[in-house]
Image 1: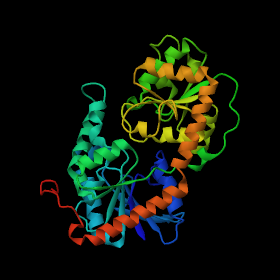
Image 2 (image 1 turned 60 degrees about the horizontal axis):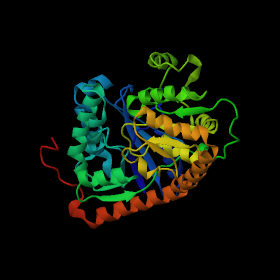
Image 3 (image 1 turned 90 degrees about the vertical axis):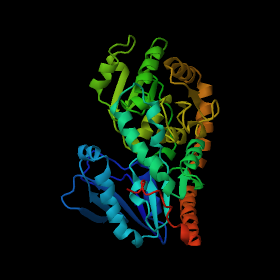
Image 4 (image 1 turned 60 degrees about the vertical axis):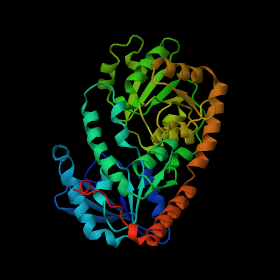
Length: 400
């Protein structure tokens, strides 16, 4: 079975980028399956040639040279879409199935009308995001609105979706009427399945994985942490894309946070992140909108209690008071739930144990690989069973 992934897997020249964790983790497992030949297609503006092909660690890679990020936006993504679409029109028949990872980067526009079976794994649904962006005007809202127009226009061309939560399943059925929805979870990296050592007994710390991203709740976390600091001597670790100077500037107006109270270790690999989880009391994840946040899944597998906002598909991961604690975006709500975990060891242990049991079954690697292969076979059967409907025909306006 020859599978072509269109997936966010950076080229080696993109030295600051890393594969999306669940994409890289599943690729590492799928390439070991007998009879599976995996190729990953992506793009970058850094290439010196139109196409770069190579094989590494049992996976074939194809990268296309596309416009710079600035030019991509100025051309409303049309040049990039056309470049990738042109390549696929020539080469798509070399593969048994195209597997699209997400609709945020206009992948359905690139594959619309191609005479090959297609499956789209939903990451998030960008057409739903603009209304959650705080403020009246922001570049993020503009870019998501543009991406959302492509998503709404081209998702009806996809027959088969792989979804994770109640939220994405309901939305794709509205955005692509008559589609088939398959269910499968993401693969979690092996480091989080290893048994953690004993919790440290020193100064307690809470973790936020969103860096300085406003949509992940950066400002709300700082305000909640300021409330916590009024009652407990606790430390906040902000992992991800965040530098100490930016964070310190953000906390300058808060009264109870000092320079030593917030630590910014940067972007961490899986082993370091698993160790951070083992040293912490809880994960704070008060995002504005989310489908199946990977950091929540990793924390649950590792046995770290989670405080998460009840938005999007989060409730499919966190059963309130059973596998974690739900909150609102109000700093007082976040702080109150975190305070419960900081003050009640029995509650902390109960939630951690139950969440780990549920999450380790949910993210069992062998089960996910078997489901992935079963979904591929189902998509292929459906495609060859209905040859007249090999590609949903969109209105001519949509294909222009």
